[in-house]
Length: 323
Image 1: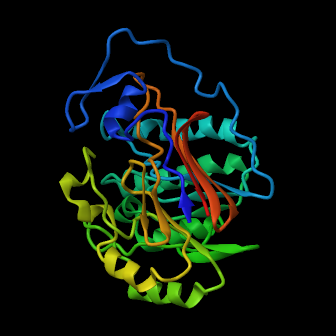
Image 2 (image 1 turned 90 degrees about the vertical axis):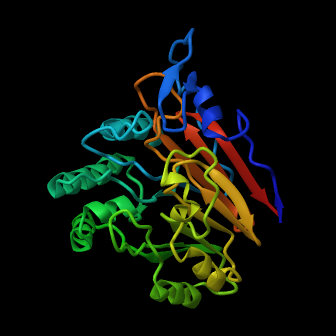
């Protein structure tokens, strides 16, 4: 399987480079930022249209780590602006022919007030509804830290959303989405043995399966990432390597996860591993406005697909896969 190297408009895809794209200078990895001199006027980030869909391709809109919150977590996370950002992005994207929205979890940045967490979670779902797309919503660790699981199920039932894990079939492939098991606040989630068995029972040799999950299976390097206190184990399921060993020989063209907030790509055997950038991260602009970061997945076949990440209509990560 041939893989083109991910193409970017700045290299490398480090946080420093992404910040420079917008005229920020990094003072320290703690996330303290200072604007460079001679700031240019804020550009029109929707100046260009998104590329036309490829014929006969299925097109997915991928959004994760929206992190709606009552206060801004840091200069990077403008949590109080997330709902306005979603409204702005939706206003542009609903004109494009997406077939499915996949929201990869962490709708909220939890607070100590459970009522606020519930309200913010519902508001995030409502903010995505103007897209008028069939949707799959995943659960993230912050959702489960801030809201009791039965309450999350009640919200999903009220909005007629999907179950926390499941399958959806398409003409020549299927997708699976997973739910983490969370034990204690601040600790990484795990994938249950029951879910691993379910994957093995539902991914057949003749049915390529794209997997979507909030946590990744395999830990990844942090390289200046301000989160996780330098502990790479926190970037994935706590039992992710063991779980991956149990399913890695199944026909899985790609795994998509959120959680880490920075985009990355690598291969594990024949499987392409994508970490998608966080919607909430203000990594591109030297202004208080956050454009909202999203990704698209265009599948022509299980052996030919493209993953792009955008702010506005500006693509900053382009990864085509083909055999």
